[in-house]
Length: 269
Ligand SMILES: CCCCCCCCCCCCC/C=C/C(=O)SCCNC(=O)CCNC(=O)[C@H](O)C(C)(C)COP(=O)(O)OP(=O)(O)OC[C@H]1O[C@@H](n2cnc3c(N)ncnc32)[C@H](O)[C@@H]1OP(=O)(O)O
Image 1: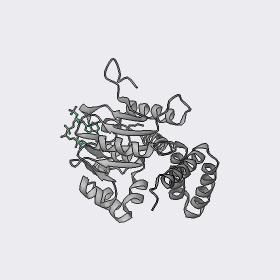
Image 2 (image 1 turned 135 degrees about the horizontal axis):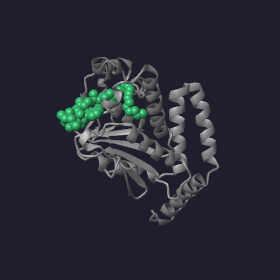
Image 3 (image 1 turned 45 degrees about the vertical axis):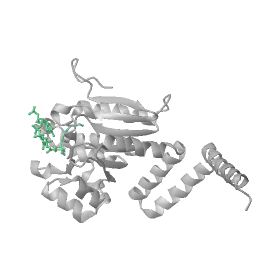
Image 4 (image 1 turned 180 degrees about the vertical axis):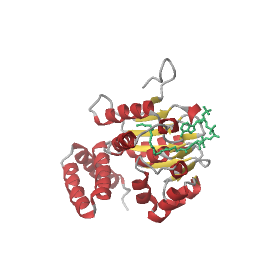
């Protein structure tokens, strides 16, 4: 993964557990803040998810190094001295990288093992599913810096928790705890060990056809993006693609084989 400057540790680490790639944001002394280097490393990783590489992962778990931060957001040092165009360009770049994760054919699960603030929460919301540690705190503090969420927070947060609650978090800049985030639907689960819980959930998903998982993700996001009418058409078309896939043929055959074996094994009454 991307080396961190002159001989320092890589800013992004990757390891495998079966067919799940575990990706670690690796700037623990800086709250895993997202600077240009780490955004570029995320971009390079996300691009590999789309490429037809050998032995691709079938799921991704994203976590932060250490146990204090998933990510403390955009590196505030990068906020200094930006003119309007470069700030806008930086936002578009971060949005594009996060969008690559959302568009990945694999399920991407954020293991929120500490604070997820600002761009850190925006990154977690660009993942498909979020599992938080009990001590995690999640928020969009940009307003306290005289700014607003710039990497998708104003769009994904209302879709996840509703406009009113999203506006409360964005306009106060105040973080919420993991249990409140779970109550609101911002995170799917609260787990003492969010990384292990994320890997276990990933394995439940990778047990199914990767072809179908990719298309189910695509259908959900299409509807959220383009509206229900367009989403329904895309859903139907993607079902069509799965209907002729070898994976569906094998799964249906396995279903019938299982039925046959259970009926032949049944004790005569
Ligand atoms: C395309 C890539 C571009 C990169 C970025 C470009 C940006 C630009 C434009 C505009 C962006 C608008 C949208 C903004 C998005 C944001 O995310 S703004 C940042 C939001 N995040 C925060 O406000 C969190 C700030 N940090 C904290 O609240 C606390 O640090 C903490 C995370 C709660 C941890 O607290 P604590 O445990 O007490 O440790 P600290 O001593 O505070 O921090 C440890 C070290 O980490 C450094 N650090 C923490 N957060 C950041 C950060 N966001 N950026 C940079 N550095 C951070 C902190 O300075 C400490 O470092 P040292 O002082 O060197 O020890």
